[in-house]
Each structure stands twice: as structure tokens, then as C-alpha cells.
Length: 330
Ligand SMILES: [Ca+2]
Image (cartoon, rainbow, N blue to C red; front, side):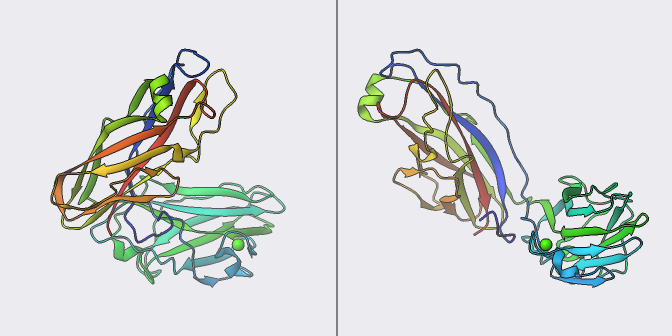
């Protein structure tokens, strides 16, 4: 899903789930869980490849993709890349633009790429003055712009679409022998109609002991309430882990506890929720649909969590795992 630019991705909450295994076979007390919370609140497209170009670079299509050949440039050449295929959801508000240049100057004599953007097919250009700075002798990734940088103007989704949106690259310096492997673009945006809140942010299993081991799991039911606002559009909520394994802190070798040992299911009494996952499902780094429904505000869902436990595999210590919920349009 992350790779689909047409999806509105709203990573609304990263939370850490702590499991303290206090009375396992070793009989040791729990370690401090060391919880921290980070909240992300901004959808972003994936890196979008150019598919059109015009200008003076040699082998210019080499910069269409990461790897697989490169464009070559010399001093004072200018080149234009377009055809990025940027498609934002209706109502999206652009809050940041980022251009990536995987580039180098073989002779490293101060070669610089100056980059500007067009919103109208090349008739008008931004005037940021952004450059890569002197390029290194070997390939380096340089990012211009960023999550809150709109290059000095307001953008509509249409201005980012083909054939309006273009990237202009001007080569400054002397005696430049440069290469450009890739020049993709990504867009940060907000969807005023969709937002998501999670409470509590951190689901803490506390200290799990012998009875939990005997049962094979600890459970928080419900663990969290996710509240969805989705004005004027149907919605889908995805859930994923931020890593393939739990982070372990304790006196034993890291048991490499898989993320799938955290299982989740969803419930709701709200009639605007039209699909749920009613049986406990292993968490995965691949986003999985957790619920979906029709437009509305204040739509509450409960997420129930089970942490699987095994005397054989889970030594005493503290375990944490980040979970991200993503609200999007179907
Ligand atoms: Ca390439």
C-alpha cells in the first residue's frame, strides 16, 4: 500500500507496546520498559519516477529509475524531467515537495546542480535558489525541499500532475563530468477530511507471569480505542508493525521475538463501521486492513491485543514493538 501514490496515507500514531515478562522460567523481575512515543501525522507519496525528459544531458533516461544506468552532464547544461504521474486524492493540500538527486561529479571540481520546479508545463518556475552544493566524486543522495517546504508557492494537485509539473536542473561549475542516477520526487500532503486518534497511545501489558505463560498469551481487551474522522469519503484503517521483530531488553540473548506474536482484532458498535477483523490476526510489517466504513466523524473502534508467550521462546525481560495505524480512502 505504501507504494501506491493514489492512496491517502495517514500514519496517525506510532505506539510502543511493552510486555514485561516478570515471572518466567528464570524467575527474574521485569526490566524497565523504556517506553517512548512518536506521532506521525502526514501522508506522503512514494518516490515518483520521471518518465519524460528534454534537454542537453547525455543518456537522460538513465535518471528515470534507481540504478540501471545514469544520465551524464557537463557544466552549464540544462535538463528538464517530467511525467512524474503524481496523483493526489481529491481535497489533498500540498504541504511539502522533495526532490531527490542521486548524483556525483567525477572530477569533483565544484560541480553543482541548481534545481527549480514548474507548475505549468515550464512557463513559470520557482525561484528558490536551491542547489545540491558541490557534488562528491561518487554517487550521493541529496534531498532538496522537504515535508514542510513548498518551494515558495502554493500548489494544487492539478499543478503537480502531468504535463504541468517539471523539474529543471541546471549544471553550475567548470569542467564538470557528472552523473545522475535518479531524480524522483515525492509529495507531502494533508487530507483535511480524514484524521485519526489513538488512545491510549501506548498499550502496556504490564508484567506477565506464570499464569500468562501457562495460557500461552497475555491479553489487553480492549487495548486501544481508535477514533476515525472521515468527512465525505469512505475509509479504511490499516495496521502494521514498524519492525519484523520485537525489541528485547533483558539479561538473556535476544530471542528475536517475531512481530506476529502480537495478535490483534477489532470491534465496534458504530453502524458506520462496515467491516472488521473479528479473529486474532498476527501483526505484520505489511499493512493489513483492520476495519473499514462509511463517512462520518467520531467513529470509534476498539483494538484488542494478545501477546503470545512461550516458556521455550520468551525469556524474562522487556519487549516492545511499534505499531502504526494508517487511515486512508478505499
Ligand atoms: Ca538510473
